[in-house]
Image (cartoon, rainbow, N blue to C red; front, side):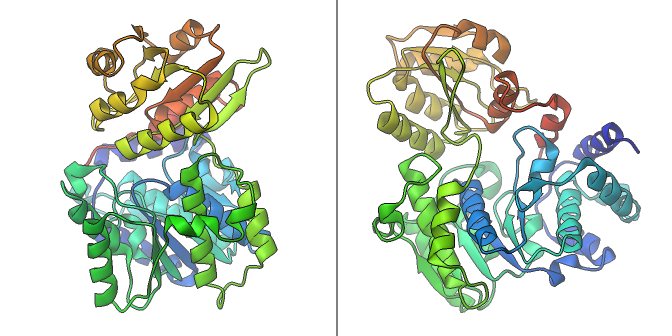
Length: 426
């Protein structure tokens, strides 16, 4: 099997859709020798900030000399970003080898109960981290938590970043219902740490934690003013990242008995962490400034708006927006369009894209004085803003991945690998 054939095989798995439930991943892992039982995890769920919090945890633990696995989704550009050890992506050679190992296991399932793409990748990650002798795996949920394929692990700690509206069609229409799905990662007697502050969501988390005798730590905004956060500059931009950092710190401190981390390692980890596509600021050789942010739900859009007001208070940017139809794109347009001196709408390379025409009315209503233009591609949009000093790209991580390639921030042509982010619930 060539690497191109491996990517095609993974693409073909998407035909089986996405599925909430643990039956298949439990059976698949058992066929592979239950690698999850031979590793240590920190399991991270939540609506926003999961990836950033995972990256901060990984960075702090790596500073201590531990060998740290990192499992996240979606990827921005290349599939291998999902599975990393000490921030090195899994190689194409290892992807080929692991796929060859798990294909016979997948083939034992009937066609009407076939493992999904995410279930297969979850098993690949477990096997890789075990082979790599990881001391710890920072393990991000895919969707929800309770019925997510990642929930076959028993971690050292469970983390819920926050509970906001997203994926309501699968997780529930109220924050209490969404919180119940996130709280599904809480295990008996395993510490749970969260920044959730919405009362109806926090009440659910507290109830589940009590029922499982899981010690609960609630991180507040006041915690961002305590050492070491009070006197360091985070490498990730935005006030929201300070709360993510406080959450990561609380998690590390909760686990000091099992995995000691020095204060110096905490500081160094937080000041050196890299997590692309989140208020990422890039300046071209000509001096043009781009802000890339994968804001993909109303809470994320609000976070981007706050960051722009913090870092660029005197400048209205050109705003390139591309969004998915299954998101609350109307609300996001109303949050982001007022930031801009002009708005350029583009399709996202996804079957789920909202069309620029769909976004147009919402943007015009939200910012009646800003010109709104429609482009047929991101490439066309980038040509349109070639003379704008400040450009913001937002609305979907899929769009950010394409932008990173077109702005030559990554040396890759991985359009087909970006397509692996496609999914549809079965």
